[in-house]
Image 1 (cartoon, rainbow, N blue to C red):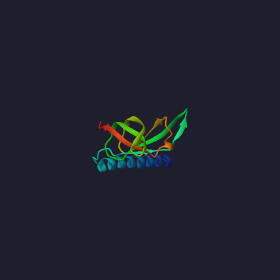
Image 2 (cartoon, rainbow, N blue to C red; image 1 turned 90 degrees about the horizontal axis):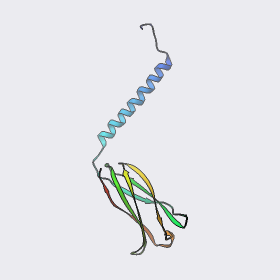
Image 3 (spheres, rainbow, N blue to C red; image 1 turned 90 degrees about the vertical axis):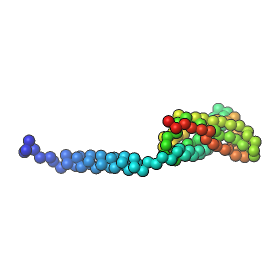
Image 4 (cartoon, rainbow, N blue to C red; image 1 turned 120 degrees about the vertical axis):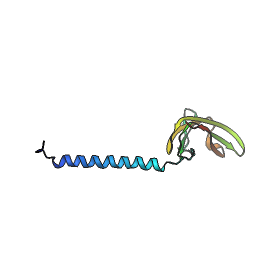
Length: 128
């Protein structure tokens, strides 16, 4: 096999593959080295209210800004008039990995536009 030479296309494919694999390995090493041990930091954001079949749907976005995964994350959304709770809704997401986002919906019978505020909080989660 001493007389077989690779053409430019074979060398190009080899070079691109080598670069891609090197970048992937570099990223994985960087991610492993910089990974902290901060607990889950869960941020809850509410979206624009929509009406559907005489119910008011509110999109909820959960972001885990921490370094650990959270499981069974339970979130509550409250419709409030001052200190008075008008209606409550909650949902649970099974798995919220570190530095990730999950979306869900809660529904209300009461129009959120008729109350003073919507409040959210995380009821709890489990570390898997």
